[in-house]
Length: 159
Image (cartoon, rainbow, N blue to C red; front, top):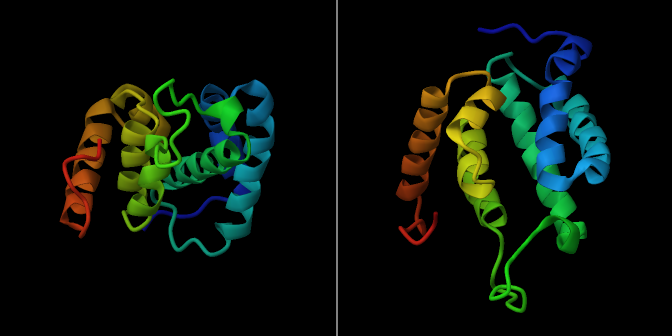
């Protein structure tokens, strides 16, 4: 079982990668607020962690959720829907569709699925975010998708 490091060490190890991720998704100005919110949420939950495995995936999952929340409050700043989707209330960005579906996945799979299919990141970037390789990220995303397909209501129409 992996040991959970003190929060300060965890923060120093992940802050640059998390900020970079948020800046790419939200822009630098919005990323600053999202970064603070991400680590605030992590700090609140840190004492309840049972082990130190997959901490990188865990923090990136929190960051992805914070980015989703930020896009809900400022959709015109963060979400480009395209001309055909702009007037449709039923059209939602892929990451919003995946949010509720991926919640029950193990942390690494959840992060890989959301980052790949919700944010369309390449496996090399996902691997870096998860602290693994592109191949490991591909395997985690594939495993997560298989789990999602087994859930009722998941069909080939989802990306």
